[in-house]
Length: 102
Image: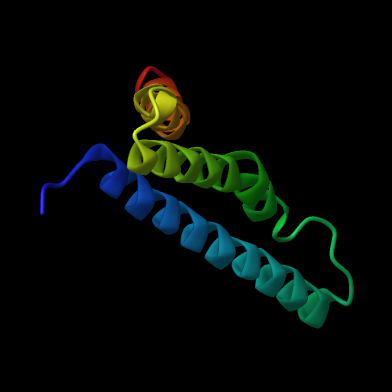
């Protein structure tokens, strides 16, 4: 079996989706822990929830669409693949470059 781009897209879509579910439940656990400890929750788990909504789920969706387009042989599949790679790498590279030059 020849490995193609859409195989990686499908695997990365699954990975980002599973990471999103894990971070979502981690955020809920942090909020529940704050309520248990302090009696109220101000912002525990908010950053994890924002990472899920703003980063992980859109990237998982992009990789999933790229995998379907690549599997069906649609022409935009390659462009969607590289768009998904850029969406996954750019925020991490931006933060790494920002912390390296402080």
